[in-house]
Image 1: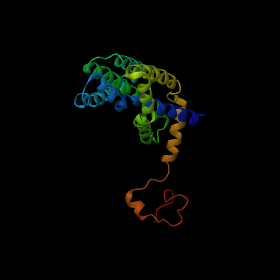
Image 2: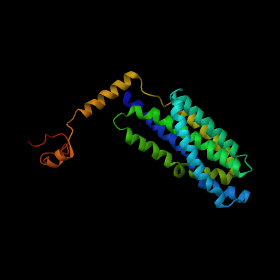
Image 3: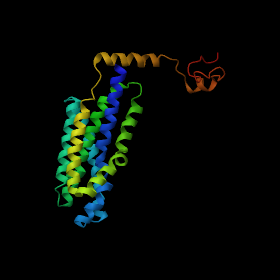
Length: 231
């Protein structure tokens, strides 16, 4: 049961990262906005730097908020920020408005959600937290490739203003639904996970010098990781 729950949580976290990362699918929107307002690339290129700053601040804030609220509520908070940010972006008429609502608010919400996802997923994998962090980040990075075509299709079909509004509502609904599949392990489950980790850690640890001296003969089945080093 513990194994099933942790993989459900990981899958939900990966899916949430894909939708949170949609804020970085800026390339889909930049051409329609430039054409509509007459902006040039030197003006709109600032959005990336602003988004990175907003995302970084959101990660810090998410860490603080996760200590005071259940991660699930932090996810609801970030989904609401994304909803408001995308909805307000759909009504902008100035470049500062774009910087504020898309660059700051949406990215800040994405950073907050990123932290909340990690705080729920990583405790399920005490032995492989580095790998799971990478997988979650991969979901965030793949967002533009996976959902970029959806954003592009909405923009072509309904215009960029309606596309932003639809995406805001969609992100809010999906993040809130996924949050119900992501929970931290209970104390009992944490003990089970810790025992599994301790059991794995109980195997013989080698220094680099010992590894270099270890014979490879007779180690086909274990790769030389569990055989005793030569005397």
